[in-house]
Length: 244
Image (cartoon, rainbow, N blue to C red):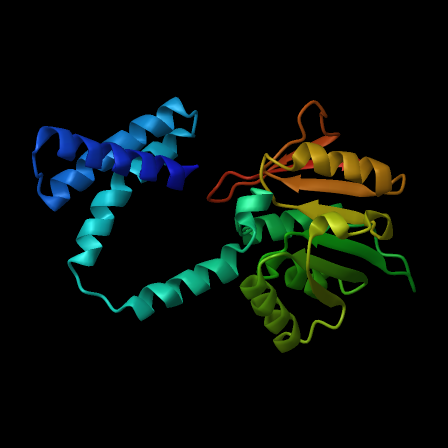
């Protein structure tokens, strides 16, 4: 959508130049193009922060071209961004990092220790594995599984697990919607508002009675949690907790 609106704004600028005979300076033309794209974004119903991005993009592009930076730099930056954000455009779930205070807040929510018995925990969209490795260290009686769609975070999480010698952890590169939640005693996710309703339906269908479903920051529309735990971290996070 953003790209189409930028192209529409650029086409409008070209039409204006042709009809008026004026030749604005490149930076002024870029500012006009950005203004038009921001206005179109507003009419298209895009979020307010997109308006600023749309306005700044053409001038930033013109200024960047004046720096004569090697194209290889942009290719490398694109590949890194693709490896990090991968299918964000499809899932609408960006890469979020849970804070260490969230890691510690999860500890008392885990099942109580039972001799010779392991509980199971899954982190949906585990990023670089902070939650998994922390809990694996403080509660070694659990088995921890992470699933992540973006390849670079998967690699970093795998290295973190291996270098930390967390034998009770594993990481899976794939789609969280393909996971069978019936296997787990605790399901944790830090996603975005977009998939929460769908994820709730999946959890209700698959999770066993008595198991815990925990969402960091994002509530399920129309489903009041049994517990709410506010966390005093940088983002003022909140844990929403449902017992299935």
